[in-house]
Amino acid sequence: MQTSLKSPDDLTQQGFTLIEMSIVLVIIALIIAGVLLGQDMINAASIRMQIAQIEKYKSAVNTFKTKYNNQLPGDIDNADAVAFGFQARGSQPGMGNGDGIIAGFYNPTSIANGSTQAGEPTMFWVDLSQANLIDGTFNTASPSSINPPAGG
Image 1 (spheres, rainbow, N blue to C red):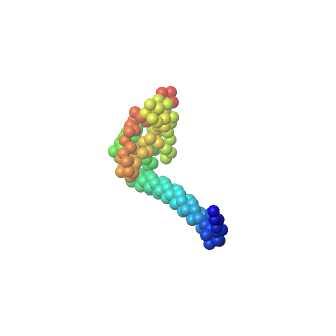
Image 2 (image 1 turned 60 degrees about the vertical axis):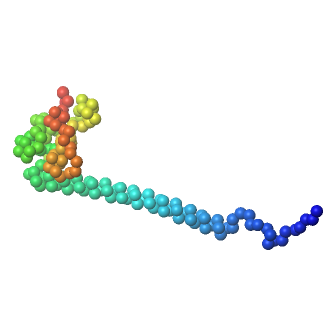
Image 3 (image 1 turned 120 degrees about the vertical axis):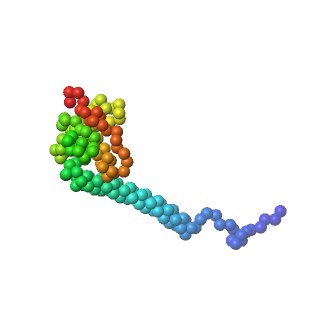
């Protein structure tokens, strides 16, 4: 039986060189950096979209005030609400009294309807919607849904 010694040219390479490993690490780092940058861009776009929506509502409120004798949506007193074609309001505080403050009250009886806030904050969205200043239809509030709870 003959044994032959292998020459160095016959030896196969085992493992990776340092240069190959560093190239792979650079590629992985670039991929991670790209993913993180993409997430930051998505977050920034989301924030920009929220700011634009807030500005849109701010503009809608200012337009409403200009169009309806400096009244805030939701805070219009009953006589003006009826005159402008909006839903009638109640006579109690927080139901549209024209005081320049959008005040509401806690209504535990409306939990079944999915809301515990009632009064002017509820009518705020209805008034903006009925004035066609915002997208969507917010017409679920009515004079009966803006009445304060008994004893309140």
